[in-house]
Image (tube, rainbow, N blue to C red):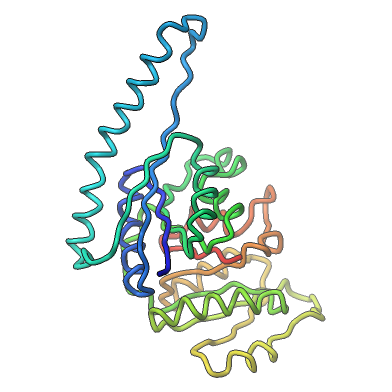
Amino acid sequence: MKKILFPTDFSDASKNAFIYALKLADAIDAEIITLHVYELDSPAYLDVSIYLREIYEYEQLSDFENYKDEVPILRSIAEANDLSHIKISNVLIQGYLVKEVVALSKKENTDFIVMGTRGVTHLREIFLGNVTTKIMSECNATVLAVPEKCKYQPIDKILFATKFNMDDIEPLKKVQVFASFFHSHIDCLNIKPPHTVYKDDFVVDFKNIFKEHDIAFHSELSNDIEGVILNFIEKNNINMIAIHERHRGFFEKLFEVSLSKKLTFHINIPILSVH
């Protein structure tokens, strides 16, 4: 049975993303493992060691009580969407979120990680990275990041950003398998700077390899990579964007912030990060 790992902090963004986890689990016949990771704050007065145990026990108890109250809410979300048949197990761990997500994903051999992302409000937060993009980078599983304001809609159209080189063949195959679960159409979009000649453009090979599948191939000339993608999403009613994690460097723009990271904060459709 396939497995979906769902890290959650029980925020509204996380609960919103849970619907995508449920829909995906239903489509691929998977179980969901919810993971809540809590960190114990270090007291400023470490020399007063007599109180440390009481402090940690209090924080653990508080977090457990919160966890105990929130888990039934996830069950109610499943019931409200007629998906109560999905097998759901729950894990509570003390530690650091990214480390624990990576470890549990590896231990359980999860197929997908689905999580909500709240976005950012300042450039400094982008430069330092955030939990979602770190998990995208460090986990081998395919990660589905759901922006906070994204409301679930059927996944009819998926956009795959590509350079049309051979390194993108296997990631596109993964996206195609994902699309098949939802009977989705895929648009492959390649954006080239004007007046540039590419010798590694294998669009003909792509068309031959995927000729039996519902995939269209597009090329645009522009220096505004992000703008072209956002316009394509709006004009073609795209429901999800897929990006090959290995090629983030190709999409780097200002301050070396990759397109996959920038889109995570700027669009309201889910992002599928494929290794």
